[in-house]
Image (tube, rainbow, N blue to C red; front, top):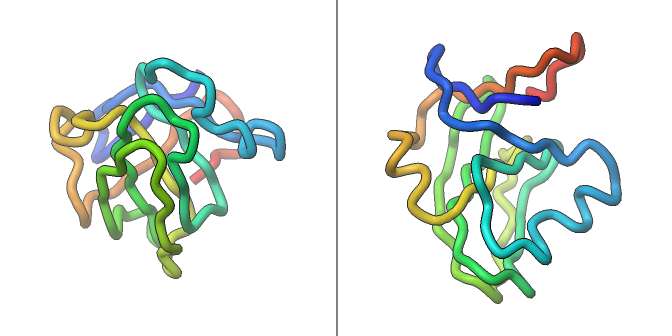
Length: 116
């Protein structure tokens, strides 16, 4: 289990794409998303084949949100060159969580080798 955090606030549980297969599958085939999905070493995403819109946070160096976008299904995005990690959540989640550009972001796990 992993948690998406910002300044000691727990925003949501988060699934982390830890291997090639989980990165390739992403959110495809899901009807919904509870919590968040993180893709380390990622600069762009797409929603081709997805059934719902998503919020996307691009996280740069210093583990800070550098860009936020809401992407409808069946869209391609361009790369965000300074992004190191992408956080995805169901559209509207970031507003409910109070997540904004400039906020620090962290993924906490029980793993001694953190993702972010």
